[in-house]
Image (cartoon, rainbow, N blue to C red; front, side, top):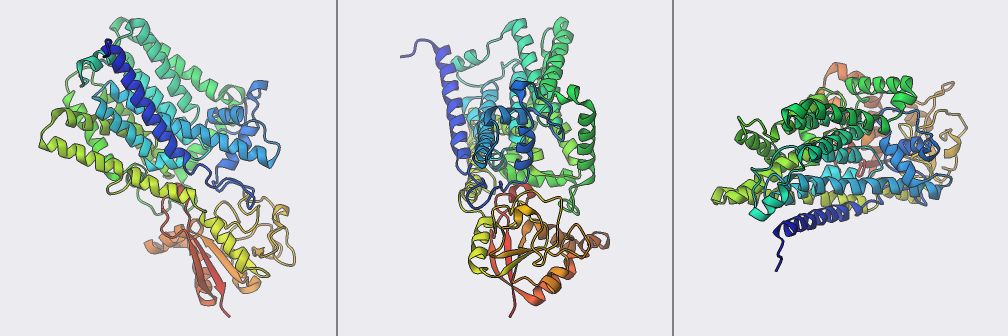
Length: 571
């Protein structure tokens, strides 16, 4: 028999939190090897990982080299990747550094689930806390991107840590649960404890912003939390929290001080980029305010999204009129951040990640309250919550399972490359655009970042020296006489070079097909090369193989399952 109920409540909270963390960890470790360099290819299949590794290697934090000369996003993740991944001097070193960078996000992704559980443990009963934590553990978008060595999941973990400490400053008298648990989780640290909590909330907001700039908006919740301390201490506490935020931001991205000109240039570029668009990727798509909802449906789940919004709304309504309503700053942060990404012309799914912990908190809260209230309708809500976690209607664990299977099995690019190497011996394979991450693995350097220079040779083989080993099958890319850069979907590939096979990726044709379907004359001008090229292709070639059929349509989820279509020249 346990004689200390306070200790048992804390131990149970720790046990459940660790359990959710470990579950999230196991889920993310499955498929972590997706797209890694191997014996058939020398580069990752993710377009951003090589760039991040390149700039991470330009750092040497222990020797005081803290300026990567690259500030499209903050430096903190690059620094962590460099410290843990080590120096890259060989292909084996590169694979090791890349894998370590992915492991960082595996732990960060599982940590998001634990942090959401910890937040809800103070706001509702244990069942609600578990539901909220599992929502993040199972969220397909978070799970998939936790297996990438990129900045997004790491930054989202820091956002969730900031939320955790900021929400500590609100009282927990309304938390439901048995009395022992309520007593254990309702302790107050007094003024000194509030000051430390405010400092930590601000510091994590600064670190989040120093990883992904717009995530610094989470400081709004920390600032709001400072209003919960005694009136005479509010200005001091808010000032200290703000100072901690600024100091943490500078520590995370020291280039703001060490290289301010480059920092301003890259930040300005990023702001222009999000305002102008990303090539044709999002041209002709709905407003970001609508598009990001579809991203959340796929990356989180439709039922989870509905319950998350309802939970936040109901919690805010129940706390109306109370000066210490802890839900209001969460909603304010989510709305401000949603407005920011909604007005942007670049609409990647990963931009929604800062919203997922907030939605999971709303979901977990409404599930916990429904369980505590009892009654038939409350039980129905809990049952629907279980279905939502499982992936009923999309998202959740079932959708995560599908992505995990894709990432654990041979990638369509590898499968297409193997087929073409086998069937194309002594023949040629034509590429309609520059080879990149979406190109079939026809030779080891196929996915190396786009080359800067071209040179013409008799076979029309791609000119970059790294690619000249692509001899069997020959990989050809048409280059006009006297030109240094090849043109996408140049008719010369079909009429002059006439390769035996042509391989196309969904990353190459999806955007054009969408613009054609829209039928807008202004948009069709972007398809002036594509339309005649495809017409000639279908006249002289026939489709013989397709790989990755049924893969996602969302750009930054398609990374793991693009569709590859292979055409063969008709006799």
